[in-house]
Image 1 (cartoon, rainbow, N blue to C red):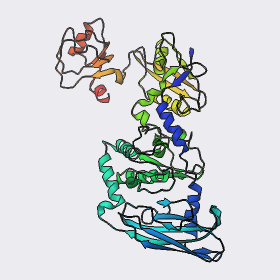
Image 2: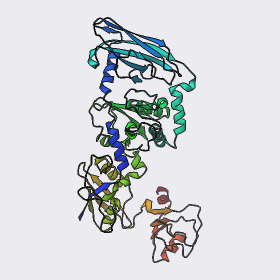
Image 3: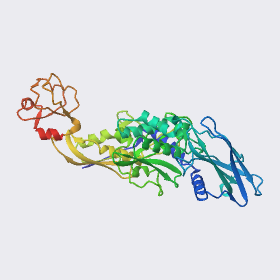
Image 4: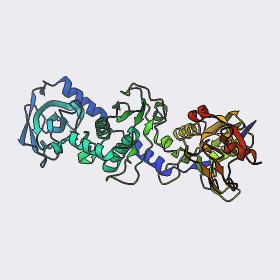
Length: 498
């Protein structure tokens, strides 16, 4: 039998969709230019001049942990009336193939505004252009320098401090806490100048900064991970390995792009531990640098915490997206409860459809899309399903783009064991007192053979209808004397396996 229920619903995930919408703007438009500069630096490391133009970069004041230092570029030769200068800084010891800082080109030949917060070996670079166009580069130069200081001023020491602060009960909680530390202590650099892991000191940076810092923090915590980059998306994020499975994590997109201070209150978890399929919805590219497949959703934040259910709490709406009450005057609707009610009434295939509406107004309402549907469906398949109290095997499916979740009841086992609805009493319990199971949510109880006394009214006001126990025990005698209780015999092997 098939039952279809059409609900025109508005999803109650405004804050989460808002974060994603803002974060989606974070693809760095300077990304390709930065990659070009890195290639120019590495392929032409000995080429400091072109077309008769030379530039000399001199450090006139050494950078320290307290002062930014001063670098001056001097151009010789050439015929341009004005030259443009673009400065960069590389953390040579930690990230020789990427930038810590890269400013926009301009007419000022002096760099004296970049404060560095970590000890280490660095390279300052300058590119000279004949105009404000990046394809007019005529010369480059660089100078190496070192910042010294106490051990506590190193990026490695800072990472160890953060890991000690964020260490959780297991790798999942540690990875989550490190994710939260970054989203709560940093914000996105809208000037698109800072690219290094020193966001841990600085407090702001672009996606490169977030992903480099998260990689460093996870490695310091002993969590296997790598960075994922895409030139097509102008973006970088991470992949982490938890309990043998790889997952994708985008800390940048979980930190709202409109914020200009840490802890804006809009930090989220939409991109914590996604599989490839879900990540591909808004990170679609063909040049991602990470190759191991991410297929699991077990560690996904919403699945792990049981919060996937929120995607099934919706509001009824009309075709214009305005809220309207149902027959009982209620706006809120629980889709999971609708599935449960339908299968308890005997339906074996149940469809629930959400209408998909979108608004361009960021202050408006946001609606279910494929990613949320798939998380809701995955969560449905993690439940212990029952049909009128009997264990059932069900399968929830969702076809991307359909806006419809379908639940199939595959098998029902009358009187079967359902772990989530069964109370296992302690092995050292010897007696069960008056009204012991009053208001207990369980439908069944496992009573071990050491119980020798059960009060006559022990099951009064109880939902329990089945006792699992040993033959010849007080539990069997009590169940046989009761018209409201069924008895299921078990033995030591059964008990050990359950």
